[in-house]
Structures are given as C-alpha cells and as structure tokens.
Length: 168
Ligand code: GTP
Ligand code: MG
Image (cartoon, rainbow, N blue to C red):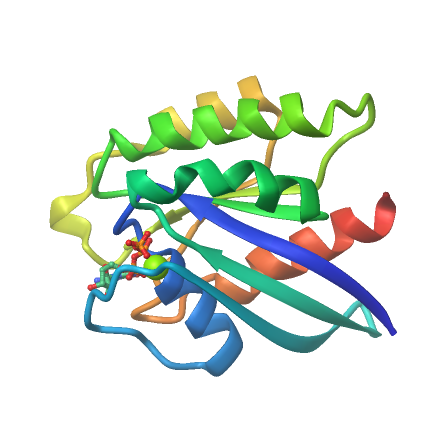
C-alpha cells in the first residue's frame, strides 16, 4: 500500500491538532494543549484505492519553528492551516508556503492544501470569502473552510492531498 508523509503546519492555536485528531480519531479536541510534536497514522481509501497517511502535527509556537525545515524536507504533502477567526494567521501560511517552495526547490507542483479552521465561529470570523478566493488564485492552491468541532469538510482536505501526492 502506498504510504505518504503529511506535515501539518501553521501558527499557534489555529487548530492544527483539532484538525488532525478529528481526521485520525473522529473526535473534537475542546481544550487547548500546545503541541510539541505528534505523529499519527491512518489508512483511507480515496477513489477506491487504499493509502496510508503518516500525519505529523507540529508546534505553532515560535520557539519550535526552527524544526520546520526538517519537517518540510521529510514531508511529501503539506496542510497549511490558518484560522478564519484570525486574519494574521494567514501571514504565517504565506511564509510557510514560500519556505516549502524554497526548501523543496522543485520545478513541479508540490502537494499543498490550505485550510481555514473554525468555520463554526461565524461571529468571530475575520477572513472573508473574497480574500480566500483572491489568495487561492494568486497562490494557485486549493483552499478549504473547515470546522473540526462540527466535522465540516475535514476528510475532503486529506483526500485532496492524497490525489495530489499520487499525481506526483
Ligand atoms: P499549537 O499546537 O499550539 O500550534 O495549536 P494548534 O494549532 O494545534 O491548535 P489546537 O488544535 O490545539 O486548537 C486551539 C483551540 O482552538 C482549542 O481550544 C480548540 O478546541 C479550538 N478549535 C480548533 N478547531 C476549532 C474549530 O473548528 N471550531 C472551534 N469552535 N474551535 C476550534
Ligand atoms: Mg497543536
């Protein structure tokens, strides 16, 4: 069975662990416990073909971002996470995106999905749909708006990434 290494990156507190754990274990992490580094594994069938994903949930906290280079070198596909409730967290995604292209230094496309979290917090939303549409076309990357709490569009994120990784 094909096995792919996926790295989940983004600023602190945006919901990387909640997204990862929702996908892997099917539950919502209500309490905030900052991550150092966690690795998970799950098999999924995408388009009728089984695949194993090794998902690395990383730390958003500043003091650990020096490890990102190591993670990026090891990863095949990347989930870049920001919070729809925090406009500033998009800046970190832009930074990570550039870092990935710099480190991978490949001419071909790199499997990346951009995820805006906390879609259920409608009254706290700061990042508008038109901002997302503009960035999706400027960066030429797929964007998903998700809620780990409500289990909205979580699986789609990983399925999209699997299709991209297979195509490489
Ligand atoms: P670091 O590990 O420090 O980098 O943070 P993180 O990006 O892993 O954030 P985490 O997943 O721990 O989530 C931070 C807080 O946001 C937690 O209290 C989560 O319950 C909450 N949260 C995450 N996703 C959602 C969501 O979709 N909806 C709501 N309402 N809360 C969420
Ligand atoms: Mg975390």
